[in-house]
Length: 301
Image (cartoon, rainbow, N blue to C red; front, top):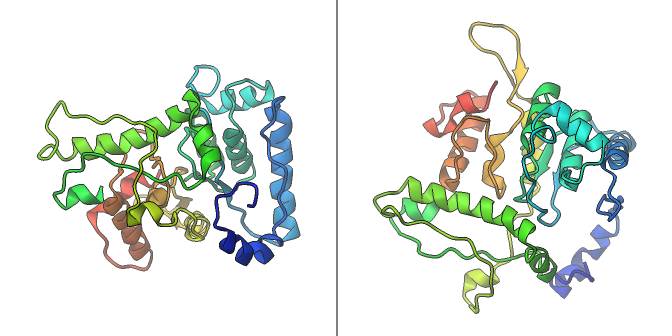
């Protein structure tokens, strides 16, 4: 914390006793990155942590800096078998977050991607499906037309340097521009074709209240909800066999930066609709009627 200089000094002083109890495990960002060896290492860490703490479930949560955008290459990361073979052969296109995701899937544990890079390449989604594991525009609705959207970098200057690299910035560009595209395409009364947005990075000299608010990304709710959703089982009217929710937990989109959905279904970037869907699902679990934003057919197999 002291080296990163992200948290205020007084806050660091207050939480130091709590942070001192947390033991950090080695991660996998090395120049001589060998995915195969690190995959085994992470799987062993997950099993040991689960056993040592007497846990029924471990939720693997990626909260590191934004990685390079992964190119989608046929024969490399397009199928489950190919992504496993790619890790075995230490292909350069394998990202550290992908190794964490595969490790979690093979251990049967949920993986939550808290950064905007495309960790969930088609091969990883197919692997999660095969292993039955789990991955996881307010102003416009008010009739206000935003002309510029600025976000605060809560990870400090180190993340700013990281995003200066073209491939890392590409990850941010794609995730943020998709939100703008969704907002524009669903509100043609406000945005006339060919209006479109562009993504950029720079310093905005402002002292408004919003620019000084602490970031609210950190939340205990995400791992708790992830674990809860792994417990939910359903069956269709024509069969009595129960099965879990679809591997991509799109219900968690409300709490993540870049929503991921079941292939072939609509990506919902609207914050209100994401929240409504989560509310409706939890209501359904206790027998209450929800809203149409639930889109249940996109959450199941």
